[in-house]
Length: 436
Image (cartoon, rainbow, N blue to C red):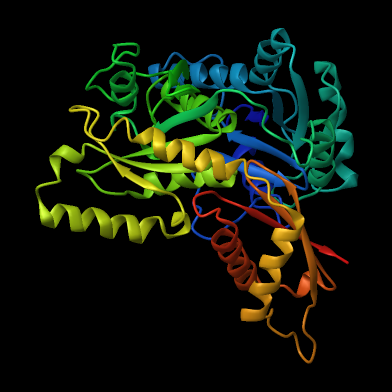
């Protein structure tokens, strides 16, 4: 499962600056794809084979009695509980403050890997300011400048070294199809699962945010086994204010990492919002198969203007997910709900597909015959052959004499053509270019 790393510390020590530097680094740390937008509270970080979710937290103030501040402290503690590793940021210029000691005391019982980042150390001449922080007993300690980048590469290199690297070409074993039901709060996720199960298995309420944790529900239908993962609704950062809600989003993101198929619920009455697009982006950048479930269809199916507005919003916001199948359902009336399994089965089968090397290269030959890669100056990159290197999603290695000459628009062309020629129309696929 994708590791979660939380950045913690008191106010004004540079946590958000470090978050932005790690998540927007020019060293290709962020898997930046067209159409995929992100909240800034969370960042999906990729470097080589390693990936993790990075979380920014509010400033810890140990001695405040303000109710809002108390909520922030509770959120930080929840983030620490959810995280696999912690970056503890302190201010090297100010030295050890009482709140720093409180945070250190809070972290020790968790017995989690803590990286102590002494910030605002702008160069080697200020390294001596870090010495007093060794008293906390966290090893390793890094002297950094989040604003200028000093020491940050050493920090991220150590983090990446400690992260488990998933094996390439990992195959999914015969098991239940894991389906995450994700979407904004109050879009009908729990109601949909209850309709499928025919029982009030999950708590349903008109109040947004009823589901605080991910809930796993096994289910069998027509000879196949499924595991439904209900998740807390994912809200925009600006609207995430309740005590538990910020870090229930972490559980939802972890659920996406565990699933094979993400069913993204969209409110037919409201259309597709920017946040719906973000949720789809979360699923896509994690390489998950996606089914777009248009819920509350009973409210709009007889209204031509609303149906057109809905289709327009899908075309406008979800162009990067044009391959994902759509289904219109009503969790309230049951309309179309059981047909959802046809879509899940289809995308899962495509998601796990293996393509013979001969079939793949025959398709590649036809694709190249239609459109060669564009020239770079007087030269043109020469693609030799391709092979499949993994499934879930299907991943292909394409051998070329100059991988750096392949333009992103031609990569997108290959992706679309592979989907069409190989019968993988409903799954994300990945292409890696390797020098022959």
